[in-house]
Image 1 (cartoon, rainbow, N blue to C red):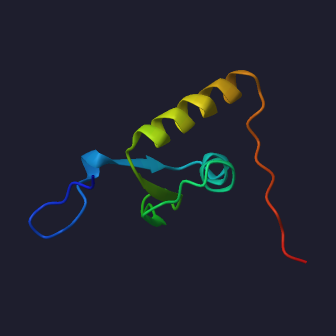
Image 2 (cartoon, rainbow, N blue to C red):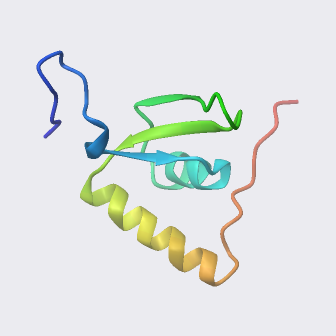
Amino acid sequence: MIIVDNDNIIKNKECYFCYSLNLHRFLNKEKEIYEINCGMNKKTNKIWFKYLKTDLLDKALTEWQDRKKNNNYYIERKVAK
């Protein structure tokens, strides 16, 4: 269930903001969890990805943390030829 306010905008407390390209690739490529929005932080110029908080996302983030502990977290980027 998506929680929205009176203007039909998803509330940030129902979202997870990701600033890691490796984590973003993991969620997209391996878990098929896709962002609902993305942008760039004006102060840091870092790209962010916004995901809805769900049980599936929580499980994926837990798996990601376990991978980081084992240094097995790099997701290869495919470059178009």
